Length: 314
Ligand code: VAH
Image (cartoon, rainbow, N blue to C red):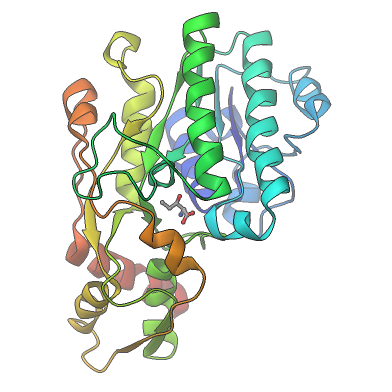
């Protein structure tokens, strides 16, 4: 079976549905700290309440399922992490250790764990950030992702655990809302364009950040997890890129559909987090090692997002 921990999250809910299409509903166990709101997620296959800080929850699952793969997506994201640093560190790190140790005990074949461009910091080169470079993250989330990458590589080298990882940019999708990130504005803006025709952005107009449409993120994750082990040469975490844009540029893209859409700017504490991150990412290693290629750019993403959100809202 496949276990998805954090299945109610922005990425977890979409990945669970894709994995169920791929492996069959009954073979993908969705797990989270609470039941999902989305009926499709709750009704399409097994759902288990799991707190990754309670290892017994995982060992109890193993009495009922034989897991071949684990996707460990449960974490506190950048903005929320700054409000509760010690808990964010504990959940992100102890949760990872519990899952890595569980995977070893159960001889799980492959483990997936997401990293993020948040592993980079103020002294990292901000344009075309290289795969191997200075990393001085200054958010708890980023520090936990940097430490998590070190530990994933350690478990691979020391214990032979086949754990794989991607440094996601901001992810944008229409099926699930993001939870507590700095890039969440790029999801909120589409909802507001439909609901009110205006959006007050919590980042300044020229804040350029690496972003990716959810279908590309899902494809990259599954392509990486299905690649033969010898092709996976990076065992910390792969840089991954699709596009970079500013709030002004995404507003212009939306105005192609809604000419009267208006954006205003009211930067908050998340501006400092965004300013510590790269503006563009070099993902040559992912392209060379396992054939990564993005499919969506800003305008094709906007067209698809608005098409689906209109259908959901009508
Ligand atoms: C966040 N969406 O904003 C996440 C992601 C690169 C951003 O890690 O914290």
